[in-house]
Length: 177
Image 1: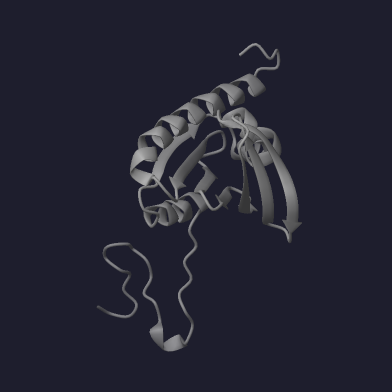
Image 2 (image 1 turned 120 degrees about the horizontal axis):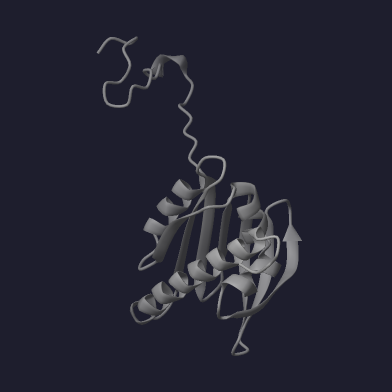
């Protein structure tokens, strides 16, 4: 292949390996989280399109203290215990049955990963045109993975239903949706 000829499979220009610079690859938050979830044993994943602009979607979902108890059926409350820098948090999550868990969190626009001693949770979003958002979510348990997997799958489906209803209600100015 001639060094000026684009790659026949991708159409990308050739990489000049003699220049001494490394190629740079940028991936969106959803692709990044898909790759991360693929490396977590027995993680449960789901993905959907929402008819909501990305900014509005992430303003709601990324506000963990307010949105998590409304989306996640088993969560009673979320409290930020500590902020470190622009994108690191430590959260306390209280469940409906009274248990508490602390999560280390990385929260960036369109990307959130949370982990505790018991679980790892991730969510990511990206715009799909001006009025839609692609949302990816995964959950994984550190123990009892086989046992908890079907429960987590059911839980995520319910979370997506609640999220869709909440976003529809928020978009209806009368609040009746």
